[in-house]
Image (cartoon, helix red, strand yellow):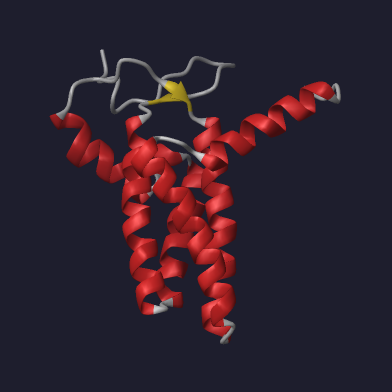
Length: 155
């Protein structure tokens, strides 16, 4: 049987399930990258973080660079997760992070430093909340959108 911490669990027709500690680990790394980007005013670091977000949004959080690090370096050294979570909300959160990182990078690289700082700080706040308190703003936005669709009869 595969290690539950390193495998994505799903059966056909059901959403993938992931170790919830992986996205929190990724949020910690993201927090560090965004702190460094803001401290240095580096649009290039925000571009790099945007690429990480894009990979997480497109391929899934397990297949992002930070997900890979979690699976290779952290997961084998800790106990298996007590529970798994739906992978869709963290994946959506990666897309939200991508938007903020892209806007921040565009701000820094175009000379609109205020935009780089504002978008970068918003992304940093969200990443920090997830890393420190396991509160994922992007995941909450996903759940609100799902509830809204259901109320409108689209889900």
